Amino acid sequence: MDKETYTEPVIAQYQPEHLVEFEKMLGVGTNYTPEHVLKCFEVSYLVKKENDELDQVNPFIEAKNHLLRHLVSSQMKAERYFEINPPFKDSCPGCSGTGELYKFTRKIVQVNCHICAGKKKIKVKCPSCEGTGRFQERWKGGGGIDVSCKTCRGKKKVAVKCSECLGTGKKPKNVPDYRIKSTTPCKRCKQLGFMEDKPTKPIKKRPQPANPVLTQNLADKIKETIVDQIKQDAEDALIDPEGTPI
Ligand SMILES: [Zn+2]
Ligand SMILES: [Zn+2]
Ligand SMILES: [Zn+2]
Image (cartoon, rainbow, N blue to C red; front, top):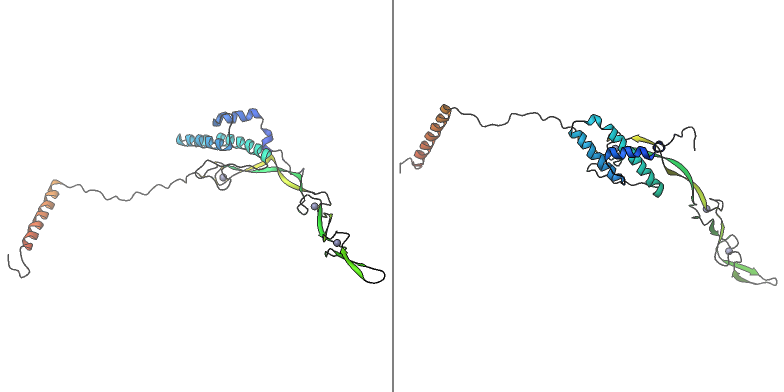
């Protein structure tokens, strides 16, 4: 571990009594999942938004972050991975709904050697028979006989110490530990975990077609015109194409 760059994990600063404060703030109860924390946070956020109190939302973000860190760390300790299914319709693709990115402390663990699969030995072509499995036994007086190779007993291969792991069967691997070393706030969702609706631009008011208000005078005039037109049409219809009245 590089001592120069090592910083105390954020999670280590929080004792269980601190978590209680955050649990109360979000109203998650005492036995809760990451998904429940996120849902409670979303509800708190929406209430603040509804009341036009988004300036007061930061403590809720903090509470949500701390509870999640605690749960993520616990999951990592138990499973060596963590999985959260954010209950949001539009969860943030940048942080998978958590609101921040976690950097875990790392540790060296011994894993099975990938060359010998932990068996310590690997099989190679028999050097005595060059992989044929047979051996020509010569007789002194001439002639000879074809026999099984004594080194590999006719199996063509022999097991030798794995040179990758030097016969230990194990190799050191640097893997994430369960402790959170540091977190980075997600810029895409501003730590909310979900994508906030983009503020809609005010719609420009276009002149709407409206029913014109008629004065009694104008209305009568239109009526007269229509009546005259109907009379005219009726008269026209009574004239045949030759122009003779029917
Ligand atoms: Zn052999
Ligand atoms: Zn090996
Ligand atoms: Zn995000």
